[in-house]
Image (cartoon, rainbow, N blue to C red; front, top):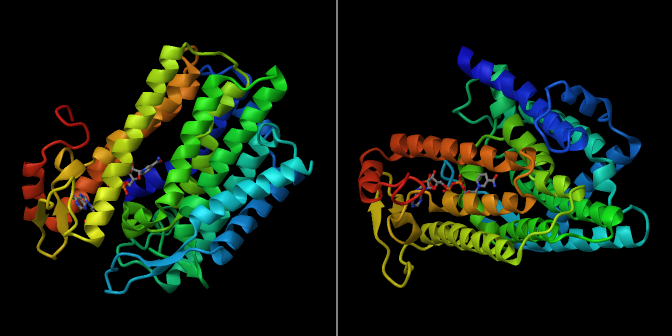
Length: 405
Ligand code: NDP
């Protein structure tokens, strides 16, 4: 427990500090790895402004309202430990496009300057941090109504890792909502605003900026187009909703994943046509692998008889009756979806070029995240499925990259 507490405390302090450090490196050190004291320079400019607080609150309210009232199909999640199934309103596709229409209308009306996310980046980051820490405190308290039996009961651990699996306030499922709406959509809105800043500064939007915006827009749009597939992911099924997930979704995703666009906003360079084609191909291949693998698992879990690549699926039956798909992408590696995701992440970093290290932070972090996540998932599946998991691992020995890892 001491170790868990130390990790929790380190994450609570270290991850926000890292984000301010990276922002400091981009803002004051031209994307180089500056001495840690640059963190203090970033913090000096990071106090929430009235504009940032107003914008962020309006943003949260808009996204919550869309989640609650926008049209969308209702689907049941996977079966919970008590045998019940929660119902989810899948209106993300509508909410995503409605948000863009509202954002463009507000900018066009002149109420908000297009490059506001650049000017208010640090105050917005602090505002989002405050919101995430406060929401996690609420979750800690609210979650006690329906605590997950796996929680440790230690206050620090419970705050960070969460108390409840699926906390809901009325019709609002807080985890499902925070997983995507306020963070993922904000990420690509920030990206567009950073492109606008580049245009204001240099009179053009460069190809690298267009590539980064287009790739990440595709990633987020795809998420909402296939929103149903999120219901069978690890986060929704197994992760308690506490500070870690809440902060990750509200703060880390929009403010760290926009790192390439932030750098490019003040670094206008161009790429040779061959590099553009190669990067676009990498992103496309990564996307096809990622999407195919995630859809195959989702479809198999909802309809196990459905053909995979034109053949009846090969699978391993577990003791509790769940089936592990062992054909298609899931017969090539146990997490080919991670490989596709990683290839896309690389394609997002390549347009920034090799002049500065900080915009490459994303792929370093993402590599560590995916390796760690795969190992954690592997351990969990082994303890859950026992011999059936071992059989699956013998059938499909590769973890992420066939033939290599
Ligand atoms: P997966 O969608 O791969 O889900 C893993 C779960 O699927 C396992 O716990 C197990 O759960 C089930 N499973 C494992 N093997 C099989 C099999 N052979 N057949 C059927 N079911 C199986 O993992 P994640 O939720 O981690 O990732 C989902 C997507 O989100 C990935 O594409 C990932 O790259 C992406 N992602 C992106 C992040 C980002 O920051 N960009 C962060 C995290 C994820 P059970 O048996 O209990 O159903």
